[in-house]
Amino acid sequence: MSLAPGSVRDSIVSYLSMIKTDASVKDIQEAVRLSIGGVSPSSVRSYLNLNTPEIFVRVSRGRYRLRDGDSERDGRQITGQPVIEIGKSKLYHSDCFEWLAQQRDCSIHAVVTDPPYGLIEYTKKEQTKLQSGKGGIWRIPPAFDGHQRAPLPRFTVLGDEDRKALYRFFKKLGALVNRVVVPGGNIVVASNPLLSHLVASAMCEAGLERRGSIVRLVQTMRGGDRPKNAHEEFSEVSVLPRSMWEPWVVFRKPLEGRVQDNLRKWKTGGFRRPSDERPFGDVIKSSPTPKREKKIAEHPSLKPQAFLRQLVRGVLPLGEGVVLDPFAGSGSTLAAANALGYESIGVELDQRYVDIARNAMPELSSIKIDPI
DNA sequence: AGCTCTCTGGCGTAGCAGCA
DNA sequence: TGCTGCTACGCCAGAGAGCT
Image 1 (cartoon, protein in one colour):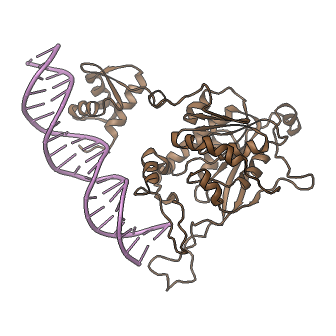
Image 2 (spheres, protein in one colour):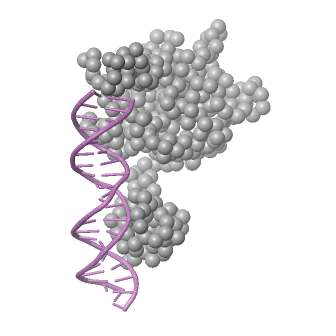
């Protein structure tokens, strides 16, 4: 009998995580048999043994349990003190899902974040390859004009299962955020034209209201190409539209009463106008992230301060409250909030980006940007 | 971006040695 | 004697790289 790769592993892990204690090899074998059918007993024994101590702990002869979560293993914290505190900004080194699960209801007023898309691209393995500049699924755009370009994630490598995983990822995020954010709070999530519909439907299913998109007008390197192997024959064709914008999907936690009630009680329920005369608009002219900012914070998807500050300023209608970035990266959103005098919290899983954020946050927030 | 080809490494399985 | 620990091995999905 041929099993799908990983099914024995998933079955063992699922059983041990369910019983939350140790079990005998015999019990584990029986659980695997009930779960996925007849499996060679030696496969189960072998799998347990080969993955001890990474995944399993051998409690005694013939007895195994699941190793405790990552947070215990690599020193990351779920709650506790922030690892970086600059001005009114705090950065926690943690898994944001674990971190959000520990937070009080209604303790955040807005969320601005650029989550990891593709997921594959942001796994530890692919990140290591990206940092080493060799291998991996990050695509290096051609240097046709003599300029070296930064690696881009290849969203097209996502298959059906990856898209389902992405949907689950955003639904889980939406549910956690929905509890932690106050009624009327804005949640703005960076996306791209190929995946924004998935983000929107998952977050809405989690209970958030979709409130349109904010368009970051920026020339990207995605799409626009002529048909492969027929460039000359179809020189007038672009297979996929060249992306000249980036959608930031806007959600709102359902209001409690009227907008004015929310504004009085929670300080949320709308966007802050750039000026008395101008409403907050859904198109923000932008440009690629300036070199000097990339030099300060070497993160593959760093967004420019000029753009982030307009966005972060807008999400707190009265300029009061706490802005959260659960995928803080090198802390650029926190830097923008700090420059505006807003209170902000970031959560970042990767120690390397936390290390970068330590210097990047004060440096990015001290950059002078011309008033809007 | 997307296709194709090569080849690595993860995974499942078989089977033997040794322990309880 | 039965169960567990451990090693070797083969398969194949998918990573990596090159090309258009």
